[in-house]
Amino acid sequence: MTFTGPWKQIASVQAKFEGLGVNLTKAFKCKVRHGRNTMFWLDTWNGDESLFIQFPLLFQLEVSKNCLVSDRLTMYGGEICGTWEWSREPSSSGEIMKLRNLLLICQNVRLGVGEDQWVWLLDEPNEFSVRSLKKVLNKEIGVVGDYVIWWNNWVPKKVCILGWRAEMERLSTRFSLAKCNVAVPSIVCPICGEVEESAEHIFVSCSFAQATWQVIS
Image (cartoon, rainbow, N blue to C red; front, side, top):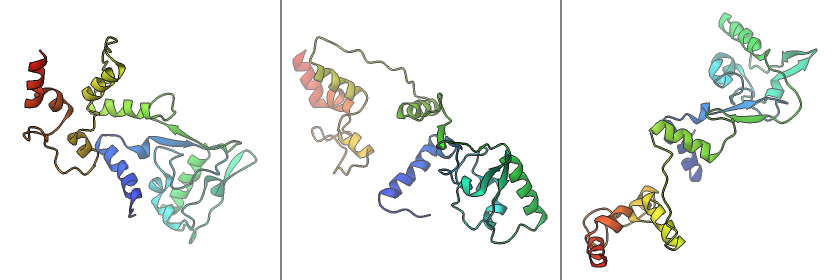
């Protein structure tokens, strides 16, 4: 599938996270209740992978590939019954065997009352949050997450915030803007014209900054 515009950037997030060792497809799983908000074949809800991956032969025969769990499964006498819509009936030994296996794993499903719920699998308590995702990413890429910056109450708060942002490389320097895909004419420091303009360079290593610190000292 090809995406354009903003959706292209959104779709590219998947590949970026996989490059960091996090598979977002396997990070979520749907807990089925009434089954009206979960796609039977395409969502991950029964097993560790979507059913279209587990049963590709049957998925090829499916007419409505975006069907919901409630479209295919119903409770009858306490048992799960399948309601199928095939382009043709499964006929080969492989297709019949896969259909039996599909019905077998579906017997563990118990449809009930309430909304289907997506569960975050990579961290307890199974509720997604940006903090949880950052924790997982830091673990994967080996970033120490317990860094603490000491605040100095003797100076204005805005100075403390500036120092914190500089330490975390969160200032709008040319280097940081370029990393965020912001078009800048050059990442070289406009004052010394020697190296890239990062927070450390502006306050420490730039020849102008060193001369300033020398005067202050």
